[in-house]
Each structure stands twice: as C-alpha cells, then as structure tokens.
Image 1 (cartoon, helix red, strand yellow):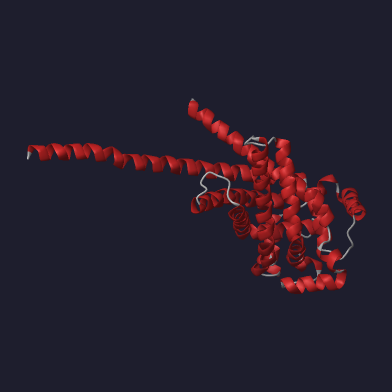
Image 2 (tube, rainbow, N blue to C red):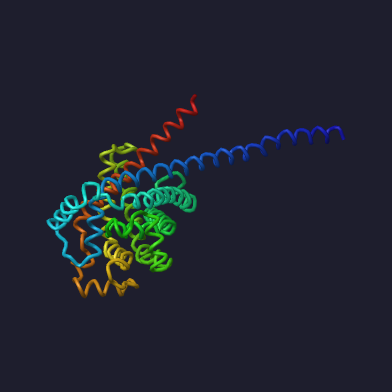
Length: 327
C-alpha cells in the first residue's frame, strides 16, 4: 500500500509539468500570432497609402479616360493633366485621393494581413509551415487575399471612382457621395461593378503576390541572401504589378464603366453587356485596353512601392519588438 502511494505521488509529479507546458506554449503562440496580425495590418495600411498617393494624378487621369469614349494616347493624357492643373489647380490632380485613402488604407491593410494569414493556413495544410509555399498554394493565397479585401471595402472603391470623374460642385465630400447615390440611385448601386471587380482581382492579386514571392525565392536561392535590398524589392514589385494588372485590365475598364454609369449617362448593368457596348462604340483594343500603357507606368510604380514599403515596415516593426523584449 505504501508503495502504491509513492507511485501515485511520482505519477503526479511527472504529469503536472506536462499539463502546464502546452498551455504556456499555446499562449505564447497566440500572442505571437496576434502581434503578427497587428504588424501586418499596420504595414499594409502604410504601404497602400504611400503607393496610391505617389501615383494619384496618373490614376485619376486613367479613370477619366476609362469612363469616356475619348481615344487614349500619352499626348492626350499629358494634355488632360495639364488642363486640369490650369483650370482647377495643382492639388486638383489629387482630387478623390481622400476617398482613395479611406478605401485603400483598410483595403491594403486587409489584403496584406489576409495574405499573411492565408500563407500560414495553407502552409500548415500542405506541410510548408514557415517556408515558401509551392506555386499553386502561393497563387491561391494571393487571390484569396484580394477577394477578402474587395468584399470588405467595395463601396469605398465606387465612391472614389465617382469623385475622380466629377467636379467639386457635384460631390463635395465622401459622405455627400454616399448620401446622393443612396437618395438618387438606391443603395444597391453602391455594389454596381462588384462582379467584374471580384473576377478581376482573382488573377490580379493572385499573380501579383505570386510573382513577387517567386522572384524573392529565386533571388534567395541564387544569391544566398534571405532579404533583398530595397531597390531589388522595388524591381520585383514592379514586375508583379506589370503582370498582375495586364492580366485583368479589361475587367478594370468594365468595373469603372459600371461604377460611373450614373454620372456619365450610360446604363451599364452587366459585365457582358458593358463589354459589348464598349467594343461596339470604341473597338476591342481601343475600348477594353484604353489606358493600359499608362497603367504600365503607374501600376509597376505603385505595386513596387507597396510591396517594398510593406516588407520594410514589417522588418522595422520586428526589430523594434526584439529591442523592446531585450530591455
């Protein structure tokens, strides 16, 4: 009997530490995951704001051509920018950028954060935890991140498009756009163009993240450096933006036509109907690919800045966290 008591006491001593270790480990992992999510949201928000502000005049010019029947050329784009500057002032080139920031900050924060989480989830599923994903899951992670961000922020994108193509006397601020659309056209209009946006973001976000992650992996394998230099990140991001935006550009034109139908006098209601009308009036290339050459300038710059800013801010936040922990 005495031996039995001793055995039980030994058993208790052995099992108590084993019960505590998993709990502490889970708590530590949960804290790390929470901080990683916060860092991703902060880095993504800043990345989106910096990138979009840098190319806002080009973006506004592109939208104005996309929603009109005027032929696009680099010369006409320059004239439009110059006329806007003369007639409305220098800062009018950033008209609609406030609405862009209201949309792009949550959009970029959600997209980058979602991408990090989808990479982690898919990494666990396919057995590549804390490693670079294989090509197909890498593509899926980007597409899923884009879908998530669009689904949660779409009405702000429509508001931004409306402000970009109208004068100040029509819409004075973001709230005014929401009020006038809801009153004059109905709240359902806030999601007009949602379908082509989702269809477009699948290849765009998928290929953008896929290209950037792939180029970083190739670079690491070739140079032996795990972290590229900032200029190399900009170049990888530019390539990602060029491929991603070219793959989905016709759907971007359709999206803008549907979003601004209420102020341009057209009645675009479906993806195929919009495509047919654009092709009939302007032709396939001049209609659905209008402004693509400007996008080849604007897109790589914006995406390069966005990816580079995100990575560098992530690295900075990680270093600050380690510095705080050491103190």
